[in-house]
Image (tube, rainbow, N blue to C red; front, side):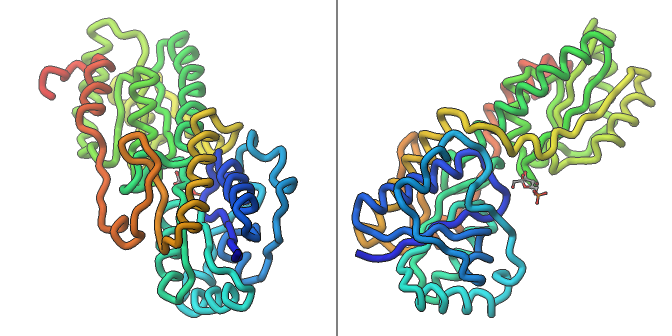
Length: 327
Ligand code: F6P
């Protein structure tokens, strides 16, 4: 019927394996030959592609990471690299490339489509920072991993009556920080989209909350704000409260995917093959109003995403910030 190739690109995200498995198995079921591409776009340039069988994707669903490996390809970033990749796809008879990755990977896919390769994208990033979709593969697992880690930090922080600064991932987006802010009941959350660098106000709040009887505090700091060690030092010096910083880092990217990540990744993987079968070209698959859908890749890139104001307000009020009356 035709040849589909599937790759994972950019930062890995739990659930990517489930998505690959769904593309492979649905593809085979519908009569396609499906190739697994190793190491992201590099795998096309180096012709590291293997024809996959139903069995090849067995025992993958429950594991984090990506068994296809992933990379951020410098060569593919160049125009010449994209041209070469398109020529290789043509030579190998690959009609459609399914790209599982984040914004950067989709930019590459969009560029590749200009050279005549049909591209279908599935959102795979723990950051949740892709505008056209309300869900990205890996976010749910990453938030749950971070939440459990922060629960633990709160226990030790509480025992020592300390302030804990916890840095969570998200690149320049604050979705993981916001969700952990609510899920962990953080006293303070610093999001790149909201924090105005008013450290004096932050310190004042910490002081006031201490005076009001709070015995410890958890400050969730998004990676996009950063400088967590300096922040902890600053808080300690200004408030006299013993403060520790913890950067959760890459542990947020690993682990067995949650049911939600497995199910949504599987649904989107199968859906990708369905739209290929319908003859659709250059689409991104995502979730809108709780349902799987697809959108033109160019259209998707015009969309903007922003932090939900109400969720931010909830996080602020429930964290008993002393300034909640001013929100
Ligand atoms: O995009 C996912 C992500 O984990 C971001 O949250 C983070 O900023 C980045 O990737 C880290 O990238 P790397 O694994 O290349 O250090």
